[in-house]
Image 1 (cartoon, one colour):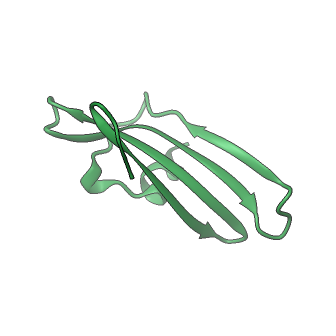
Image 2 (cartoon, helix red, strand yellow; image 1 turned 90 degrees about the vertical axis):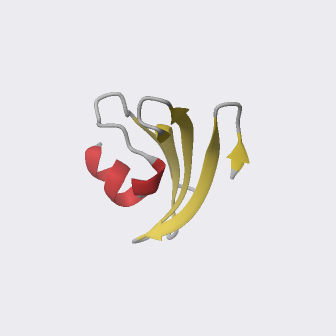
Length: 82
């Protein structure tokens, strides 16, 4: 976790099947929502069976409802909406 001027960045690591996933979620405070809202989310994915295979995914969040910190879950909140 890393603090920023108007929010913070959370780095998380998890496995999903054969993929090792490193995710970065950036939250900023929203006065309108009265909570921290997800500003950006990106993942670096490495296939654990073929470590030389890596890819990066940046998830677009401009067409989704605001995701607040209290409901953030990278698998159900982000990955299902791509």
